[in-house]
Length: 298
Image (cartoon, rainbow, N blue to C red; front, side):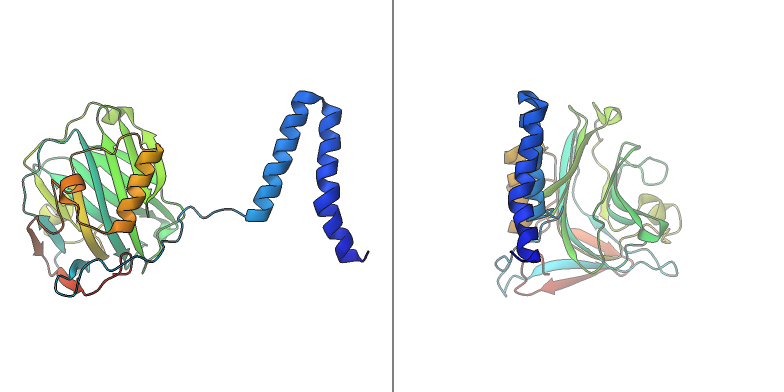
């Protein structure tokens, strides 16, 4: 046989035989481990590594032409007033929450604030805040959730890229202290934080997207480099947890939310619903209709 055929023969025939001979020399118990390891390595070599964020398949239109989807455009500038949207609704006591939304960033080199909630905007602490935090000009990204002043972070890897639409979901349950993050319907990370266990986020505060509490109320409405720069749509807040985040049912349910692109008021938008909750914009934030939009391609 020629050289190429010889190489293929060695890969397909001699390599498995070599692994089997080594395994037999090690004894029965170690033989099983060696053979299994060889099989896994062959499988990885044949299939490659699957990406953490799988490509989202094409989906049907979200809305008919007579009821277009609304998306918000935030453009922060230190020389202008901050751009922020306030949700005009009553927020109850929260011993758990599920937040999910679609976003498309114009700038990933700075921190982007997706949501902020506080009962005392001038002297209080951050009761609930969701940010994509950027370090070293965007080289390192972290999903940061603050709950009653307790800051939690998980690495956002692979990093969020500007100009692309993503679906994000964040959930927390006070009884367990577990915080979970999903990107494009896939579990990014679920972790336990003992400091958040047993906490209750008080009712009656101001809920907003696009800016921090301090930039809007304490720094004369001037952006401090943490405002949202980009697009936001289908934001929803629920007082219900997602259950066991790593269970197959939870993972499947969150994947369905990412693929569905619906404002599900009854399931995950009973506290803030994108289509039913009134909102007020400040600083020049604009609303834009997206006709015949495809989910994930707004």
